[in-house]
Length: 575
Image (tube, rainbow, N blue to C red):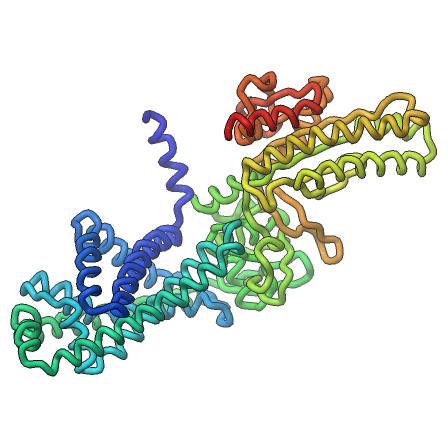
């Protein structure tokens, strides 16, 4: 428990205004889902709706839950107004502005309903339930207002959920089911309201039903209704006043920025634009329709908009806590690398983009997130051929290339056999990635089994080339897993799909250490633990990793061929 306070600063750095708005939105969306499912019970009967609303209100009006709910509602509304003020540039052909407009319209539409039901109950003890609400909706044609509200709230929430989940590895598989739920839920709810309202209007022809369901205790008096209407009108005017204030503040800010002067942004490819001080680099790209990768839409939830500053970066504003957190997550300690969505320069700036966009628009929305950049857990396996320099000294160049290609072919075959992807070939070495389509535990086990198969395949290659080799081909393997950024890296026609991050760098350095530790492979403790190998399966050692302050626990593998049996044994114990 003593270590808990130590995590608070990191938690604060990891939290942005957008994430607070997301959490509040999820709470509100949960309420909307619960409410719509309750409406859907109208397809059974009005009695079923009344039973459902009993449990619905019992949960959402439970005091701790109610406090969280109303806090989330007020916070979400306030942050929506702040987003209207703060956002300087939109791409109007995307759904992001639509989400903001829909979200800002919800409070104005829902005000009368919330005050009429919730405040009427609190002030006057009104007991408006489904029979009374359905009667009022259908008798006064308010049903169209509520239908509009329901559809707007649902679309707004679904867009927010899409923006949240689209970068998750499972989203592609879950998308068809989420789409089905997004269509069926409001459809069933609207049908339930229609069926329930029709039943109520039929029963309303009965005078006895009116006597029992349209009483003063349930609907209140005309004076009470007038008071609630005045409150609704005042709050609605106040809300539109806040929107007007936000728009006026935008105008004042734009005027001040123009008077504050213009700065020049040079993109490193000969393109230069002039923008007012205060715009972020990404907003400048959007304003001038310049391609700029940004998978998360400028929310500081990814690092695909990263830029490298050319020249002096000392005059730039310091990174915010959120920007510093994101850069630290991707292993970037270079002060010349910044997030374009967060950097708001106040002087001329030259830079180039680290991720090449594959679209003609600045938001990069038409490219797949995986090709532009995506953060996920991968296992990196580096393998290198030992003694290739001495090999080349004693052979013709084409003979050396032949042997190196046979080596890389044997390594690649082992990687592919166990679900990995050969990724980069650097001289006589190779980087392989595991986990592009598997969970972390499976990826770690695949990498360890691939290392075992590499040793076996190299044995076979040594035997095949024994007549031409003065000594057997040897190798070194480094394996480490962690969060990395995957995407297309390069320039113009020289673009490759690869992984960037601390986990990849560590795997490369572990491979280098196999020379000094005289072993065939070094496996990080992270991979050993995730794969489920026994703690005493491999000897442990602490090593110093360049760029890290603390030593790192690793497992030394003298004979890589034994790894496959250790993985099978660990899987059997886990089962």
